[in-house]
Length: 181
Image (tube, rainbow, N blue to C red; front, top):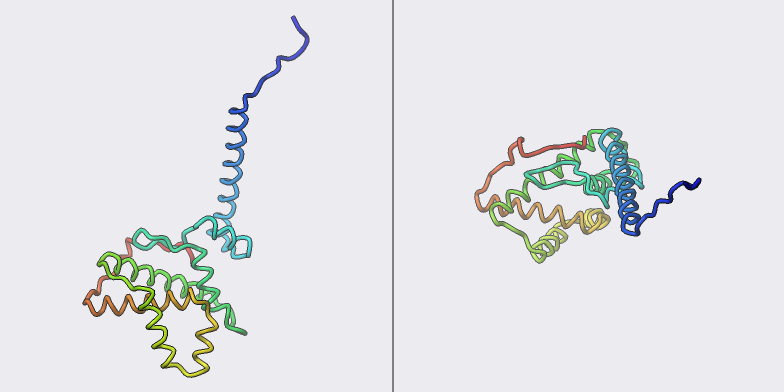
């Protein structure tokens, strides 16, 4: 009988599986920590925002479509935080999420009725709107990012098309879940 402990031999496949499981566990722990931070403690810092772009935590669900926290933070920042000397009020968060939920509802209804808006229609409508604005309003509009302007104009055009088609449908409250407040 030998005085040595038996040596365990690890196969390369077993090692790869263990490393993979450790990585999966680490990612799960990080996702859980950020999820709790976002949902329970309203984390909004730069690291949380970067992580939110990678993992699409839903801020609301409208008719099965997610409105992610990344979309919420971006829209909220453009709408309110870009205005200098603007005091912060918690109801502005509610205004932002309610606006995103309304937009998602309009998109869901339009999709259900096969109504869409092309990029050319958005650009043409943008040019029309620019002609109606004075210089100060034009500068204020152009200070916002194009993705935000495009989304606002797209929703406006979808609403117009739904009105023209006589579609006045609403998304029932049973199909809307809001997590961000």
